[in-house]
Image (tube, rainbow, N blue to C red):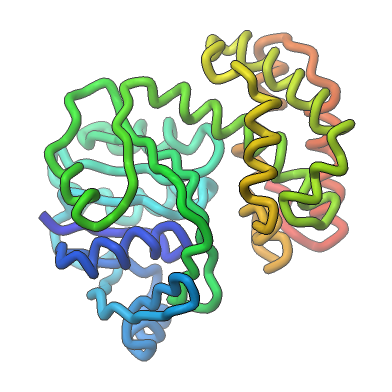
Length: 301
């Protein structure tokens, strides 16, 4: 069965390159004829690992292609997820499996509601990658990919093993998503506001500790107590382990791209209001980040 990969970002490219080099059938889906022509001119997708670059001539097509889709990795940004799945939904076979590789919360429910005849499987990744140039992905750090839903694990997990993609199936995927969401809320916005790499936030624990306390309260009131356990301690571990890395939000801001603020701090603020959980630091951080984006002419939603 072909792996269709929609979303030409860093993690989508990382998955596609590893699946392709393992000899598995992969099809990239690109957004317009210009991108498709540029991709073909580049000769394929280049993956850089430990300084060594290798180009993989993975086939690519447009969303309007007629090939049916049985397995899709949706690897675009959270704010593009609904439009992206809408662009190919007529190609999805009944019972198609859709892997959702988005940051934050909210987009997963939007996609699942749009393609109700598909099996949507959320993915949470701690792997590090960034796009050095068009169709050139740098694998920046080993990590893990958690994926799952309430159904029986699919038989294609062995293909991930064959491709060298670390993974773990879990029936407690909501806990993983909320945990990753909370970690991102505690780290990503502050890296933008302080214009720093992750490790530099260790000098700003006076901001991080009370922020984590509010996130713990929010997770507990949202019925996600397991995701709240020792959150501050894991934030410190992540900052130390990824000290030299730029957060995904910081990468977006430096590149002048739209951020996923609506699916991180925006979602947190809305959730706190709905659950009547006091979250002044979260909401203040949200406002500070919005002002920061506006000052740089970047989208605020």
